[in-house]
Amino acid sequence: AGSADFVPIIRDFKVRRDIELLPADAQPHTRLSAVTDRYATIPPGNDPAFADAIFDLAIRERIEFIIPKADEESFVLMRERKRFEDAGIKLAIQDSALLPILQSKSASYAHFAKKGFPVPAYHVVRTAAELNQALDALGYPSVPVFMKPDASRGGRGIGVIAKTPAACSEPIPVYSPEFAAKLLDGNTPYICMHYKKGVIYDIDVLTYANGEAFFGARGR
Image 1 (cartoon, rainbow, N blue to C red):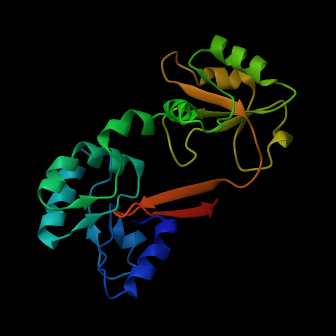
Image 2 (cartoon, rainbow, N blue to C red):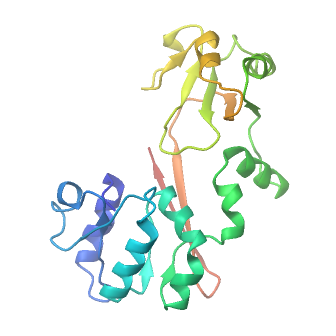
């Protein structure tokens, strides 16, 4: 809960009287102490001890509802859902059956396409040969190409393949095709698609028990 976009949520809960919030983070003293004096220390989501630590914390503090912030936390809790719910602790996560889709961008795109949602043209590449084929199909070098790992978050590992750095005005690395090819190891999948400038929107959806849905959008 220590990320910058979670700070407004913490401040909002501090003035509410119907819900008590206990933020938790791997580095709460540097990330949370400025906005709240009540917080917990937990391992990061990719730590093998994360699930047990969260469960023990929830039991000790009588927590009824857990909202994971990072993907790593959500994926771990999806596998542990039964243990928490058997103890009366609800989790704001998806069903574990969706885990393969949520961990892969290409699987997500395929899922949305099957549901009838428009999906931009994309290519999955693992080798230099597949990268060159994708670049040709996407119209490079006439248009820049956006490249990102199939499994990542928060802009990690992204880059723009272009002839000149001027093609990208954002703080994103610009690669030549030759450099981009060196990032491929033959096994790890990357996604290639047209590079589009503009605001990126994250949309969070919360479904209530009565079927109503709340949509929250934020630009970044």
